[in-house]
Image (cartoon, rainbow, N blue to C red):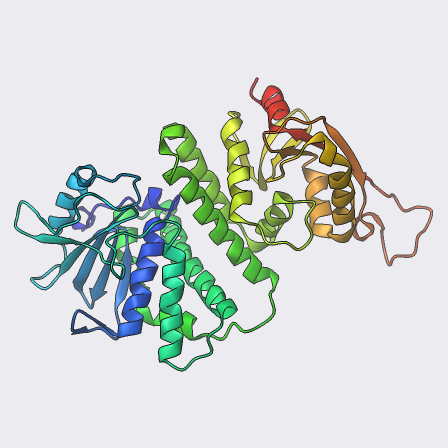
Length: 407
């Protein structure tokens, strides 16, 4: 049976999921219209990286097959092989099946392509443009969510739209992780990708859910997964000439590890990215700074607990912090204050005692802090037998870390 299934690249897809964002955009567009080019489509199935990069099914028939490319190229010739591949798809298709080609950058010729067997492939239209940049796909999808909410007389605020988008994006990527899990349990990647699909009713339910509540940790963690996803993807897609294949694969491995973390572990990552900042959302630039450190250090990163490096008894934790000597006193005070207020951060710094900052060179900074919630035993009444442990932390620059770790 599996030999007749479409070839799937799902095992590599999870690293940089621009095509997942495009699949979400198209799915929300279908939910808004309840039809596609005159064809009623109240319920549909979204399939990821099987029949094509993604496909929309109505029952057992492909309504549309979609090829997605995020290459930085302005020339149609770059995509000729992919266009031909798209036109040659026949699995589960009939005479009404449409083929679409999505690109992240404008090309010199975006006219329809006719394949060798006479099947047409259209460049997908986003409004009046036949491309959608990596930076724009999120905002374009949010506008579709806004349109759906307005059309259906549902509460519509920027904050709610952001939350709904975050949960939708998480749902798509969680499906990819689910497919990976099935592969690890013995399914072929072709079978797992072909059979583990998403029902449109599940996506619509998320859009209609009322997330009008105060910000909480679960929401922040969903947001963090999205920021990691976007920032890693953007970083690689726009700098392919600056990375080796092994570095790109390393990014994908780290991303998948972080994305698959239990919430409690991911919360620890969130605390460690900007350990001196209290209750601030991790930004895309923070993840790029984090990725810069991972790029510079060639020693194999340890993916156990939090992503870290180890030498002797020292555990090195990448951060997004960029530091200069003249900023050190303020940073040191902020970090000690954060340790005292945040037991999660205190736990992290007990385990990982060296923080790596950005590429600017600075002197090693020694910090000693404590957290009463961790170091004081029992009900809080101090007794002579209590053992109070201080937290000794070293902060070193990437340049110093490279000398210690890359040797």
